Length: 402
Image (cartoon, rainbow, N blue to C red):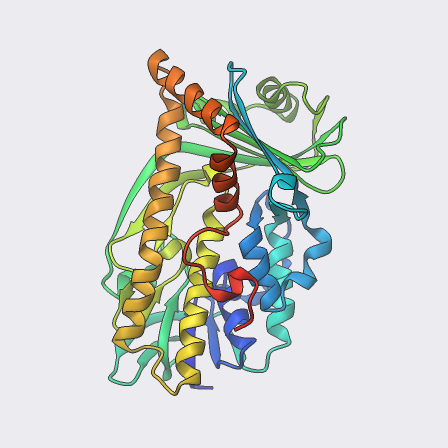
């Protein structure tokens, strides 16, 4: 397989999803990952979970992955959004849409193992690991890849799935705008005395957003973004004092909270690539745009990229067309740029809006939340958007087969 249809660089959740999606249709794929496979496979829970929206679940089901993680997915049956110190809340209920969950919370390592299992079933996917891409040479009929463990490989199209700090994006000469939010995200699992009833809670504080996401049993995943200076102080607390701070922030809605895992923390930043495509190459997921986790939409945005690439490639190959031709690249860029820009703007805007504690701004925020809560059409729209069911979606995200 020195010549493949698609080479996907980056063996994280996004790259693996693309390999599984394309491989499921018989497309020849090389998945290139710099780390040894065993290192990634053996890594366990690191505090990170993913909110999988309804549309993303439909995509994972279409490519044969969902069946391997469904039992470990915790349904989101409701979402409660509000601001600390304000009685105004927006409550989204799955029953207002249909009888299915709004989405699911799944631990990242569970998603990874489900993807590995699916890829292992596909004879057209070759995993190169460890392998490091060091040079690319666009050709008239493809792109030649050179580097450790992959010299001489050619593909019709290169998909860059490495994440925000992608070295391949730099190799392609695509610049990116980056800025730090000056925030650190703490993640951990908490046990609680009372059931969460499948409700995800997000609250906004002037120093950053705080979320509790429902997991199996009486457990929730906490995601707490804080100003870096305050985060440095919080990071030094022992587990008991850290748990007390979380309890103070969240309150007694779930009864007493008990830390049930290690604590992890990650810096938060935004990355926006100036172009989504280069000759014979596309940027997918965080390599194209990495957003704030405030709305839990990061990987869902990446999955829409994956689904779009998959649909374009599969449709063109079936027609005997070149999947890496200029018109294919232009279609991908046009299809995905607006969605990416919109979510960058929305997540960045929400974070900045709720970080402003000026009284008139706070009053306007509460007015806006109150209007959404009491306008059913607005609530329906926002719910469907959060579920990944709005916009020009690829077929697999609408529950259709390729």
